[in-house]
Length: 309
Image (cartoon, rainbow, N blue to C red; front, top):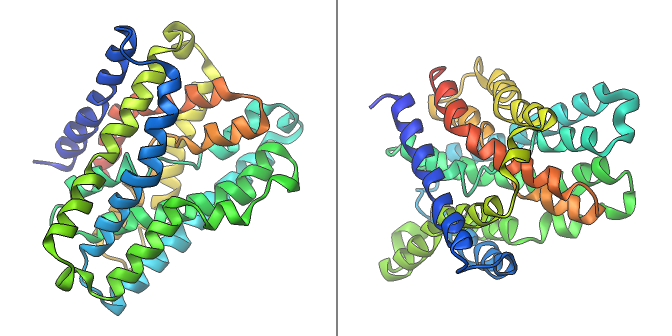
Protein backbone atom coordinates (compact mmCIF):
# COMPACT_ATOMS: atom_id res chain seq x y z
CA UNK A 1 0.00 0.00 0.00
CA UNK A 2 1.14 3.55 -0.70
CA UNK A 3 1.52 6.21 1.97
CA UNK A 4 -1.70 7.79 0.69
CA UNK A 5 -3.61 4.52 1.04
CA UNK A 6 -2.27 3.83 4.52
CA UNK A 7 -2.99 7.30 5.86
CA UNK A 8 -6.41 7.52 4.22
CA UNK A 9 -7.56 4.13 5.52
CA UNK A 10 -6.25 4.77 9.03
CA UNK A 11 -7.67 8.29 9.28
CA UNK A 12 -10.99 6.92 8.00
CA UNK A 13 -10.92 4.14 10.60
CA UNK A 14 -10.12 6.70 13.28
CA UNK A 15 -13.07 8.86 12.25
CA UNK A 16 -15.37 5.83 12.33
CA UNK A 17 -14.78 5.86 16.08
CA UNK A 18 -16.88 9.03 16.18
CA UNK A 19 -20.02 7.05 15.36
CA UNK A 20 -20.57 5.13 18.63
CA UNK A 21 -20.50 8.30 20.71
CA UNK A 22 -22.66 10.17 18.19
CA UNK A 23 -25.27 7.39 17.91
CA UNK A 24 -25.38 6.62 21.63
CA UNK A 25 -26.08 10.26 22.39
CA UNK A 26 -28.76 10.50 19.71
CA UNK A 27 -30.27 7.30 21.08
CA UNK A 28 -30.44 8.74 24.57
CA UNK A 29 -27.99 6.22 26.05
CA UNK A 30 -25.36 8.76 27.09
CA UNK A 31 -25.48 12.35 28.23
CA UNK A 32 -22.91 15.16 27.92
CA UNK A 33 -22.13 14.98 31.63
CA UNK A 34 -20.81 11.46 31.05
CA UNK A 35 -17.92 12.92 29.06
CA UNK A 36 -16.05 14.10 32.15
CA UNK A 37 -15.83 10.56 33.55
CA UNK A 38 -14.71 9.04 30.26
CA UNK A 39 -12.24 11.91 29.75
CA UNK A 40 -10.71 11.19 33.17
CA UNK A 41 -10.17 7.53 32.22
CA UNK A 42 -8.60 8.64 28.94
CA UNK A 43 -6.35 11.27 30.54
CA UNK A 44 -5.19 9.40 33.62
CA UNK A 45 -5.19 5.75 32.52
CA UNK A 46 -5.38 5.01 28.80
CA UNK A 47 -3.26 7.92 27.56
CA UNK A 48 -0.33 7.27 29.91
CA UNK A 49 -0.39 3.58 28.99
CA UNK A 50 -0.26 4.52 25.31
CA UNK A 51 2.89 6.60 25.89
CA UNK A 52 4.48 3.98 28.13
CA UNK A 53 3.91 1.31 25.49
CA UNK A 54 5.39 3.47 22.72
CA UNK A 55 8.61 4.09 24.65
CA UNK A 56 9.12 0.70 26.30
CA UNK A 57 8.87 -0.94 22.89
CA UNK A 58 12.23 0.55 21.88
CA UNK A 59 15.82 -0.62 22.17
CA UNK A 60 17.81 2.11 23.91
CA UNK A 61 20.65 3.77 22.03
CA UNK A 62 22.47 7.07 22.16
CA UNK A 63 21.54 7.85 18.56
CA UNK A 64 17.82 7.31 19.12
CA UNK A 65 17.88 9.27 22.39
CA UNK A 66 19.49 12.23 20.63
CA UNK A 67 16.93 12.03 17.82
CA UNK A 68 14.04 12.04 20.29
CA UNK A 69 15.49 15.10 22.04
CA UNK A 70 16.00 16.79 18.67
CA UNK A 71 12.41 16.01 17.69
CA UNK A 72 11.22 17.56 20.94
CA UNK A 73 13.23 20.74 20.35
CA UNK A 74 12.26 21.13 16.69
CA UNK A 75 8.57 20.54 17.36
CA UNK A 76 8.62 23.07 20.20
CA UNK A 77 10.41 25.62 18.02
CA UNK A 78 7.88 25.07 15.21
CA UNK A 79 4.94 25.58 17.56
CA UNK A 80 6.42 28.64 19.22
CA UNK A 81 7.62 30.29 16.01
CA UNK A 82 4.35 29.93 14.09
CA UNK A 83 2.28 30.94 17.11
CA UNK A 84 4.29 34.15 17.49
CA UNK A 85 4.10 34.90 13.76
CA UNK A 86 0.31 34.47 13.66
CA UNK A 87 -0.08 36.47 16.86
CA UNK A 88 1.99 39.31 15.40
CA UNK A 89 0.11 39.24 12.09
CA UNK A 90 -3.19 39.63 13.90
CA UNK A 91 -2.10 43.16 14.83
CA UNK A 92 -4.88 45.23 16.36
CA UNK A 93 -7.30 42.33 15.92
CA UNK A 94 -5.58 40.58 18.83
CA UNK A 95 -8.23 42.18 21.01
CA UNK A 96 -10.71 39.69 19.56
CA UNK A 97 -10.64 36.29 21.19
CA UNK A 98 -10.98 34.41 17.90
CA UNK A 99 -7.71 35.82 16.55
CA UNK A 100 -5.86 34.76 19.67
CA UNK A 101 -7.48 31.35 19.32
CA UNK A 102 -6.20 31.22 15.74
CA UNK A 103 -2.62 31.61 16.96
CA UNK A 104 -2.76 28.83 19.54
CA UNK A 105 -5.12 26.41 17.74
CA UNK A 106 -3.00 26.50 14.59
CA UNK A 107 -0.08 24.83 16.37
CA UNK A 108 -1.92 22.62 18.89
CA UNK A 109 -2.39 19.17 17.42
CA UNK A 110 -3.80 15.89 18.67
CA UNK A 111 -0.44 14.22 18.05
CA UNK A 112 -1.05 11.52 20.64
CA UNK A 113 -4.51 9.98 20.44
CA UNK A 114 -4.88 10.83 16.74
CA UNK A 115 -1.35 11.13 15.36
CA UNK A 116 0.38 8.23 17.10
CA UNK A 117 -1.68 5.37 15.59
CA UNK A 118 -1.32 6.90 12.12
CA UNK A 119 2.49 7.04 12.21
CA UNK A 120 2.52 3.53 13.67
CA UNK A 121 0.49 2.31 10.70
CA UNK A 122 2.59 4.28 8.24
CA UNK A 123 5.88 2.96 9.67
CA UNK A 124 5.10 -0.48 11.15
CA UNK A 125 8.78 -1.45 11.15
CA UNK A 126 9.94 1.78 12.81
CA UNK A 127 8.71 1.94 16.42
CA UNK A 128 10.63 5.17 16.92
CA UNK A 129 7.84 6.96 15.01
CA UNK A 130 5.54 6.44 18.01
CA UNK A 131 8.27 7.80 20.29
CA UNK A 132 8.41 10.95 18.15
CA UNK A 133 4.69 11.36 18.77
CA UNK A 134 5.41 11.29 22.51
CA UNK A 135 7.98 14.07 22.08
CA UNK A 136 5.49 16.18 20.13
CA UNK A 137 2.93 15.74 22.92
CA UNK A 138 5.44 16.92 25.51
CA UNK A 139 6.39 20.01 23.52
CA UNK A 140 2.71 20.90 23.07
CA UNK A 141 1.95 20.56 26.79
CA UNK A 142 4.86 22.82 27.69
CA UNK A 143 3.86 25.42 25.09
CA UNK A 144 0.13 25.32 25.83
CA UNK A 145 0.39 26.06 29.55
CA UNK A 146 3.03 28.75 29.20
CA UNK A 147 3.12 30.82 26.00
CA UNK A 148 -0.18 29.40 24.79
CA UNK A 149 -2.28 30.28 27.81
CA UNK A 150 -0.71 33.74 27.94
CA UNK A 151 -1.50 34.26 24.25
CA UNK A 152 -5.12 33.36 24.82
CA UNK A 153 -5.76 35.19 28.08
CA UNK A 154 -3.19 37.99 28.10
CA UNK A 155 -2.72 37.28 31.81
CA UNK A 156 0.58 36.07 33.27
CA UNK A 157 -1.25 34.68 36.28
CA UNK A 158 -2.59 31.84 34.14
CA UNK A 159 0.88 30.62 33.16
CA UNK A 160 1.48 27.38 35.03
CA UNK A 161 4.79 25.55 34.88
CA UNK A 162 3.22 23.00 37.20
CA UNK A 163 0.51 22.26 34.62
CA UNK A 164 3.11 22.29 31.85
CA UNK A 165 5.33 19.64 33.42
CA UNK A 166 3.30 17.88 36.13
CA UNK A 167 0.51 16.50 33.98
CA UNK A 168 -0.34 12.90 33.04
CA UNK A 169 1.11 13.16 29.54
CA UNK A 170 4.52 14.58 30.46
CA UNK A 171 4.85 12.37 33.55
CA UNK A 172 3.96 9.26 31.52
CA UNK A 173 6.50 10.17 28.84
CA UNK A 174 9.20 10.77 31.46
CA UNK A 175 8.41 7.42 33.08
CA UNK A 176 8.41 5.74 29.69
CA UNK A 177 11.72 7.33 28.77
CA UNK A 178 13.25 6.11 32.03
CA UNK A 179 12.02 2.57 31.30
CA UNK A 180 13.36 2.89 27.75
CA UNK A 181 16.80 3.78 29.14
CA UNK A 182 16.59 0.80 31.47
CA UNK A 183 15.89 -1.49 28.50
CA UNK A 184 12.51 -2.48 29.94
CA UNK A 185 11.67 -4.18 26.67
CA UNK A 186 14.02 -7.00 27.60
CA UNK A 187 13.10 -7.60 31.25
CA UNK A 188 9.55 -6.38 31.82
CA UNK A 189 7.16 -9.37 31.99
CA UNK A 190 5.11 -9.81 28.84
CA UNK A 191 1.97 -9.96 30.98
CA UNK A 192 2.68 -6.41 32.20
CA UNK A 193 3.68 -5.11 28.78
CA UNK A 194 0.62 -6.71 27.24
CA UNK A 195 -1.65 -5.08 29.80
CA UNK A 196 -0.10 -1.66 29.16
CA UNK A 197 -0.38 -2.19 25.41
CA UNK A 198 -4.05 -3.23 25.62
CA UNK A 199 -5.12 -0.34 27.83
CA UNK A 200 -3.11 2.12 25.73
CA UNK A 201 -4.81 0.88 22.56
CA UNK A 202 -8.12 2.08 23.99
CA UNK A 203 -6.93 5.70 23.87
CA UNK A 204 -7.81 6.59 20.29
CA UNK A 205 -11.30 5.01 20.34
CA UNK A 206 -12.13 6.69 23.65
CA UNK A 207 -10.89 10.06 22.43
CA UNK A 208 -13.05 9.83 19.33
CA UNK A 209 -16.06 8.50 21.28
CA UNK A 210 -15.91 11.70 23.32
CA UNK A 211 -15.66 13.83 20.19
CA UNK A 212 -18.60 11.91 18.72
CA UNK A 213 -20.74 12.77 21.76
CA UNK A 214 -19.68 16.40 21.49
CA UNK A 215 -20.50 16.36 17.77
CA UNK A 216 -23.99 15.03 18.51
CA UNK A 217 -24.66 17.93 20.89
CA UNK A 218 -23.80 20.57 18.31
CA UNK A 219 -25.73 22.35 15.61
CA UNK A 220 -24.16 20.76 12.51
CA UNK A 221 -25.26 23.59 10.25
CA UNK A 222 -23.48 26.06 12.49
CA UNK A 223 -20.40 23.82 12.64
CA UNK A 224 -19.99 23.75 8.87
CA UNK A 225 -20.91 27.36 8.09
CA UNK A 226 -18.35 29.37 10.07
CA UNK A 227 -15.64 30.70 7.72
CA UNK A 228 -13.26 31.61 10.53
CA UNK A 229 -13.22 28.04 11.82
CA UNK A 230 -12.26 26.87 8.33
CA UNK A 231 -9.39 29.35 8.44
CA UNK A 232 -8.13 27.92 11.73
CA UNK A 233 -8.50 24.38 10.38
CA UNK A 234 -6.54 25.30 7.25
CA UNK A 235 -3.74 26.80 9.33
CA UNK A 236 -3.58 23.70 11.54
CA UNK A 237 -3.99 21.04 8.85
CA UNK A 238 -1.91 22.60 6.07
CA UNK A 239 0.19 25.59 7.12
CA UNK A 240 1.60 24.13 10.33
CA UNK A 241 2.60 20.68 8.97
CA UNK A 242 4.22 22.25 5.91
CA UNK A 243 6.13 24.63 8.16
CA UNK A 244 7.28 21.70 10.33
CA UNK A 245 8.33 19.75 7.27
CA UNK A 246 10.23 22.71 5.84
CA UNK A 247 12.32 22.82 9.02
CA UNK A 248 13.57 19.25 8.60
CA UNK A 249 13.26 18.29 4.94
CA UNK A 250 16.84 19.25 4.06
CA UNK A 251 18.47 18.12 7.29
CA UNK A 252 20.57 14.91 7.32
CA UNK A 253 17.93 12.99 9.25
CA UNK A 254 16.29 9.59 8.67
CA UNK A 255 13.20 9.56 6.43
CA UNK A 256 11.03 8.37 9.34
CA UNK A 257 12.04 11.44 11.37
CA UNK A 258 11.10 13.83 8.57
CA UNK A 259 7.90 11.99 7.70
CA UNK A 260 6.82 11.86 11.34
CA UNK A 261 7.32 15.59 11.65
CA UNK A 262 5.00 16.15 8.68
CA UNK A 263 2.28 13.65 9.62
CA UNK A 264 2.21 14.53 13.32
CA UNK A 265 2.21 18.21 12.46
CA UNK A 266 -0.90 17.54 10.35
CA UNK A 267 -2.90 16.13 13.28
CA UNK A 268 -6.17 18.01 13.92
CA UNK A 269 -6.65 20.52 16.73
CA UNK A 270 -6.10 19.12 20.20
CA UNK A 271 -8.64 19.27 23.02
CA UNK A 272 -6.20 21.40 25.03
CA UNK A 273 -7.53 24.46 23.19
CA UNK A 274 -10.93 23.77 24.73
CA UNK A 275 -9.32 23.55 28.17
CA UNK A 276 -7.64 26.91 27.60
CA UNK A 277 -10.90 28.45 26.39
CA UNK A 278 -12.71 27.22 29.48
CA UNK A 279 -9.99 28.79 31.63
CA UNK A 280 -10.65 32.08 29.83
CA UNK A 281 -14.39 31.43 30.23
CA UNK A 282 -14.89 32.46 26.62
CA UNK A 283 -14.84 30.87 23.20
CA UNK A 284 -15.61 27.29 24.28
CA UNK A 285 -17.90 26.83 21.29
CA UNK A 286 -15.24 28.15 18.90
CA UNK A 287 -12.62 25.81 20.39
CA UNK A 288 -14.95 22.80 20.17
CA UNK A 289 -15.80 23.66 16.56
CA UNK A 290 -12.11 23.90 15.67
CA UNK A 291 -11.39 20.47 17.18
CA UNK A 292 -14.34 18.80 15.48
CA UNK A 293 -14.09 20.41 12.05
CA UNK A 294 -10.33 19.93 11.79
CA UNK A 295 -10.75 16.27 12.81
CA UNK A 296 -13.29 15.69 10.05
CA UNK A 297 -11.27 17.56 7.42
CA UNK A 298 -8.12 15.62 8.28
CA UNK A 299 -9.57 12.71 6.31
CA UNK A 300 -8.62 14.70 3.22
CA UNK A 301 -5.59 16.72 4.32
CA UNK A 302 -3.41 14.04 5.95
CA UNK A 303 -3.53 11.61 2.98
CA UNK A 304 -2.82 14.49 0.60
CA UNK A 305 0.19 15.62 2.63
CA UNK A 306 1.48 12.05 2.70
CA UNK A 307 2.06 12.37 -1.05
CA UNK A 308 5.07 14.54 -0.16
CA UNK A 309 6.79 11.59 1.49
